[in-house]
Image 1 (cartoon, one colour):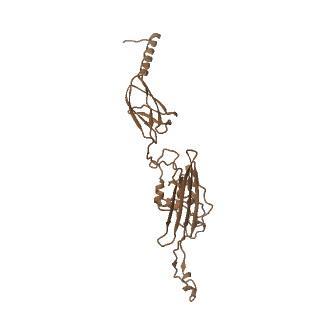
Image 2 (cartoon, helix red, strand yellow; image 1 turned 60 degrees about the vertical axis):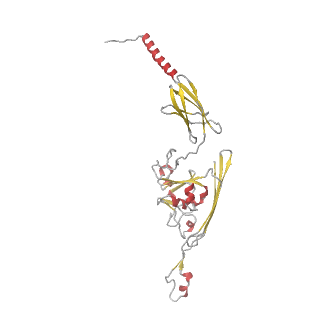
Length: 347
């Protein structure tokens, strides 16, 4: 049996050996530094990712676009990436103790990103497919392809479980029609505009659709002002409050859209109910990166008439009014309405 004892001298020698190996390892590593800039403007790019392929080494650029990576000797492929820019790569040879410099100038590129929705969750990295609740995103293209002129009609055509009934002879409900989601009341559907609560109308519905409730007049929001519509088809009272029991509709307004002008004219197959619509939107640049978007809409919808003869006897036998066609019809149809409005969005 061999025993090894170390005194103060032995411990000093052992410490020197360990420290020497650490210094030797540090001397074998090389330092890679550089800057990442925009190829067009030359401005530094912050938060760009510098990664070394096949290793766990990497870094992110600082506010001035600089980065620093420590590498052991070898040959590596280095990549520089930033969202919205085309990635670049290069190969470097690292020698022990060397100080290397590698700069990157990234070019802006067009990237198709998956739609991100934050209506149904407070997490910003939650996408539509990963959401635990049903979320519909109605894009600008979907809105234009729907062929409808009213905002509520567009949602009814594209989103399931959304109902926008057309009442007849129902007092003010003929003009401010209530909408419902998942068969619940109009006042249990929360409507947001750019994430902010939209005020309800002053009309209390007295007909069978939403009797005693007040809803949001979705048609007061011009379709020409909408960039997209997010529909959460599930109860969200825990996050938004009791007015979101049926779900949430978040209307995102246009922020940087080109100037547009359009008109729509149409009527029913019966030759009535003519609809004429004019819509326009324009975005103005304000103070560099700022914007001011103006959207307006005018819509005239003529009445429809579905009168049919009523063959029942209305008066006593022999009364000449029984043979009057004007008194033997009952009216059924829609009233004539004229809507106009404007929306402003700036940021």
